[in-house]
Image (cartoon, rainbow, N blue to C red):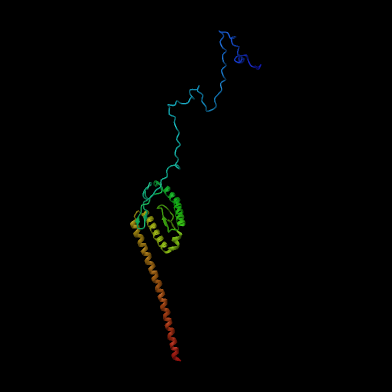
Length: 248
């Protein structure tokens, strides 16, 4: 057996085995060289390290649970029989009230007037945009109006194209009534007396109506006077014509 010459004598001891019977009885066998220590790969534990040893089988191993995100949560579908968010107050069907479930949770009331007015202006655009989409896609009759007591501008209103085309006179009348109601409510909010404000507005409307009637009466009187003058001139012309015929 060939042995490399560059190995140390201590390394050659375990490689050379004496023949049988040549080993002395009191000679102890040569100690075996310890194998070089090799670090285990990262993430693996060795049994010699008690801190890295796996837990005993009797100990329960905790299992990590993935939290459920809102997107994976069970969706709630509101219906008129089951309203998870409650029912809309003030909605009606025809001349009677209706039970309609909310599609989302009702948010809290604003406590600051500035925040309430800003929210009104921002959400008014969203409401009218949704109304336009519903009216355009479904071709329905739709009219909506809104006003905030602290707003300095006039009330917002929207009428669908189908309603504007098919009932322009009725829509104009509805718009006048809504405008009168909004004006009364705003004035009542300043005076804190809606009954007095309503009576005052009715009196003003009666005065305007009387003025219109007087103006119409004056116009009719003027027309009648012009017509009477025309008839007098016509009668005078006929008399002159008769007189001329008699002279012939």
